[in-house]
Amino acid sequence: MALALGLPLAGAAVDEVSGPGMGLAFAVCAVLGTGLAAALSSRNGWWWVLAASPLVVLGATAAVELAAHRDRYQGRALATGGAKWVVHGFPVMAEAAAAALLVIVVRLVRHRRRQRG
Image (tube, rainbow, N blue to C red; front, top):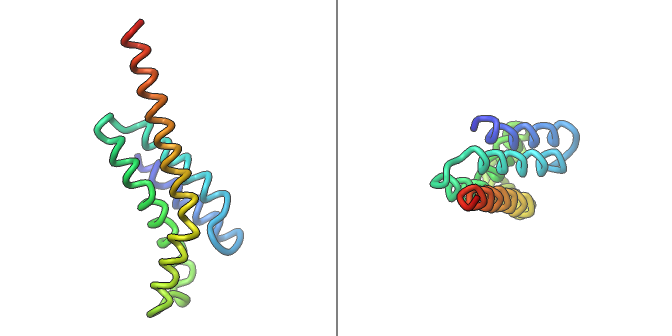
């Protein structure tokens, strides 16, 4: 499970080092990490994965941005930065939640097929 949470952080760090803002590496790692979390979790944990995926994306973005540019986010700039992280991170949040949903549906279908035959 640590790998599932670490992937978005690793992707965010790679994107921060390679250029400004979160990019493709972050999106891919966030989607893979969320899909992995959904694959590893129990049926009761699926809803936690779905609910937490946007928060993990936002948290990884905030952690890496603050670590890399602490001087930029002082006072009111922190609120502005937070709003920017939510807006720019929304597509990644939606993609991560969609990946979790896809994994959950696949697991449900496979489980039902095994029960039938």
